[in-house]
Length: 163
Image (cartoon, rainbow, N blue to C red; front, side):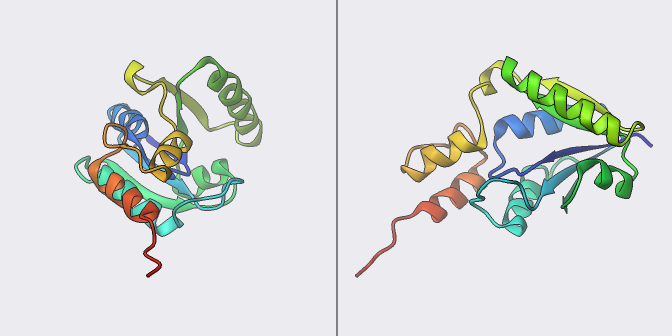
């Protein structure tokens, strides 16, 4: 069985992530969307919420499984017997970062290869940071995320009633 992981913080998951995940699911027998629980950045959503939003985004894709993990990505690959890491590339600067990360992972675990998919043109501007910032200012993110994620963002950023 060809098993791959698609790791990320998915905070929140957006249409660019979903596009990469769906396309990767066609390349592998099983794709584990691996939600990292402790990235070096401040998170908007707790790990369980990010996993639930991600599961709902891929609910109609039978060979996608969503799991949480912590620690090194290559160690998680070993735990789930995955031989591939899927990464998305949006812009040229992503390539440099992902290239270095792929080489580091190859050094740590020579049996794991990185497969990079180029994002579709309509998603090149998308990042979770962009989505969070727009949503935090009550901007419309409905063209960037699935409806259930837009609702979760709206709830998260709803002004508190102090009356």
